[in-house]
Amino acid sequence: MVGNTFQVAIVGLGGMGNWHRELIADVENMEICGSFDIKEERQQFAREHGITPYNSFEEVLQDEKVDIVLCATPNDAHKDIVIRALKAGKHAICEKPATMYSKDFEKMMAVAKECGKLLVVHQNRRWDEDFRTAKKIYDENMLGSMFRIESRVHGSRGIPGDWRQEPEHGGGMLLDWGVHILDQALQMIPYKVSKVYSSFTHVTNELVDDGFTCELTFDNGLIYMLEVGTSNFINLPRWYLLGQNGTAVIEDWDLSGKITRITDWSKNDAVPIRTAAGLTKTMAPRTEETIHTDPLPIVRADVHDYYRNVMDAISGKAEIIVKNDEVLRVLRLMEAIKKSAEDHIVVDFEA
Image 1 (cartoon, rainbow, N blue to C red):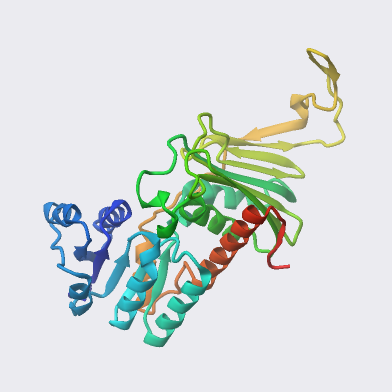
Image 2: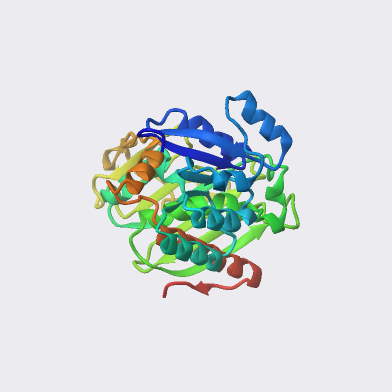
């Protein structure tokens, strides 16, 4: 440390490494002391932004002032970089997914324990306000007993044109975005996942999945559907939550949406609606006097709290928020999803 300020060295100054650089600039008592990237243009980028680049990863490890190594490389390099950092006496922040395989993360956890250093994974989507809002609806039982949650992330530009298209580097949308929305699911629902069923899409890429759909069955009977797509030119809602007494929709990340709840179940008469081929009363909308619509209970968040929590955990002032056993559970769940999709089967997970 320099005074009271934690010194962070970024390894991998690409898109996510630069994202960390920008955020850490606004965090008190934490600063970037240097970076290393195997690409010379990213080394030059560091210089242009006032960061002194190290000439090698070995230089990072040998620098005694470095408190935290932040690993933001392609997924396949995480394990080696983090383990070497821990063994060099550094704490480690690792980009998600921590590893491509759960057994590798178990090894990383063991080394962290052995070395007495903090290893924490960057599961930053826990601070997304759409997730926080959906979780509040669930936690406070605003819809009554919930029986289905749908969580979707849709894009229309395919997989980014970099290592995320390559299986050897841990490409594909399950590892890229699935790791986020699965982490959110397990944070929201305090029950075991009993069954997993999933399918992959390969619209733009045959080597890795460019999208997936997954259905989790929790022990309490709740069905949680997750979907990531990169060839969606009309997006479905980010969140759709259904309970016995109401429905909530969160359209997108700007938190547009609403909650509609029943006021009187017994008054269920309706005027039939006409389709081109007949009548239906079953699917006719309820009358206005039997339902009530409210705005979403928006929950705000500050993603900088992730870094503040890391510092507090290192200093012994707080428990780490993103716990490694939670990360390991997500990695194992992704392996079950992959098995389900590849073998076209329902997988028993924590039954």
